[in-house]
Image 1: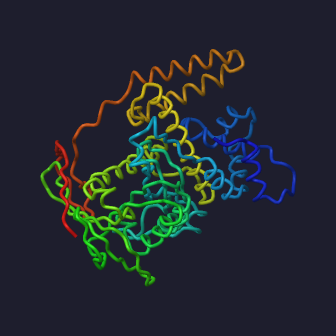
Image 2: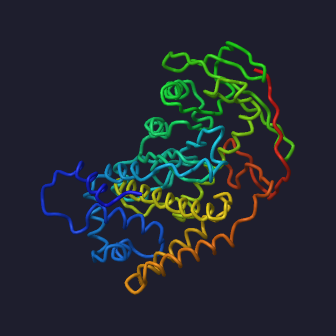
Length: 420
């Protein structure tokens, strides 16, 4: 995905070149960090030796991370993440030629160290301050592949991290976002990109967003004028509807989109398409729970935490690529290749090559890779059930229903357009 020479060139932009050359180069440190996040068990020093053959103690390695500008990892991440979907092999990843991407934010917890507490203030919680300070992330992903293509990491707000990502989205794409992005200011900024770079959006908006109806369309949608907080007025297409869930309850929804042509993009079609946005949530679950094994980072500083999360996202990208290559071999949907099993096989394959690489031929290594691919194809996950659970929590939280008994509902969702 990116060569050692490219990484060293990036590192040179953020380093003055003074002093003796480091024992571990920037390229080796990035490779070892991604390898460490994929392998899971073991220390980073052990994984560095596996990748490079160099021995260095963990405290010295932590000092090397501390001396490296965090922008090196973030710039490498930008160069590393590239779209993987193909119109021929991944038709479900596109809507009428546009790549389906999602944008959403999340957070990781930083340990309670003096360095973290001096730099980041904990958020207010129900009983005083939160247990941990948070490192925020915002990710743009290919929804049908759970593959990240752009990411922002820092202690800024989600919107602060999201705005630079708008311009990093690929052309001929359709971005799906939740109500956090369905505000006047965000819509007006995205609309400018739509006109310039052929990037489109479908955001769910809040019921109380003020808009003036300009024209009603035959499919029930309408052109409306949305005012942003800075006084700008933006013409967008609004879609309103009701979604009847598997439990029989109806939920009113409202969307804003840059797809203004009702004949080319019927309202009902876009209403049903929005359900793809939940793939972004599953992608976050794979990143935080299946790959990282929890919210709490291992890094003791914000600086090192940013590097750790950047390595995590690169590791997620690698697993997503393996899933895609396996799926293409048998023409099955990529998401039917299990994330956990793909990661497990990748870890086993890397260990096998690291230990026996000097006694194995290139042909033997290739044949083993093909056998692992065939093994994953025999262990495809079944098609998803039409089942859902209520959005409730066990612990009492204001605004959320209390879950006291596990229940689930089966069946199809039904969609109904409400005229604007």
